[in-house]
Length: 193
Image (tube, rainbow, N blue to C red; front, side):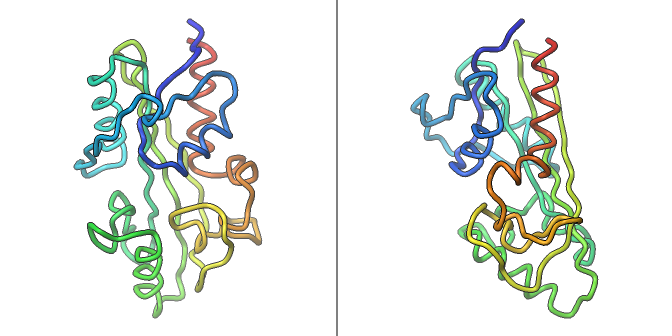
C-alpha cells in the first residue's frame, strides 16, 4: 500500500510547518485544511497515550488515516519535569514564553542542566495503531538564544552543537531533533507497508 496523503492531527501551526518540511513523499493534510477547529483532548499522563488520544479523536471524526505526536521536555534536575505537561507547564493559559521563564527560574540554583526532548508519534493506518519515538539529549541554556523554532527551542542546545534549536534552520533541526527522528521512523514504516 502506498500512502498518498495523511492527516496530521495537530492544531499547532509550527509543528505542521516542521513536519511538512520533513516529509515530501506524500501529502500532509492539516486540520485547518479539513475545517476542523476542535480543541483536541490531551488528558492522558504519558506522551504515548496523549499522542494516541489525539490521533483517535481525528480518526474517529474523519475516518481518515492520521497521525499525531506528543512531545515533552525532560529536565534531569527537575525530576524530568515538565515532561508530558510541557505545553502548559506555567499554567492552563500560559504561552511558550511563560513556560521558558518558569523552567529558567526553577533551574537557577542548579549546575546540572541536562535535559532531553522526547517525541512519540501515534499513527492510525486503516484502523491499526503504530508508534514511533525519538529522543535528543542536550542542556538547558541559562538564557534564550535564537529567534526561530518554537516552544522551548531558544533554551535547548543539543549535545555536540554550539547552537540552540532556535538558532538552527528547520532543515538543520529536522536532521537531529526528537521529532525528526520519530518522523524518519514513521517514513520508513510507511515506505514498506
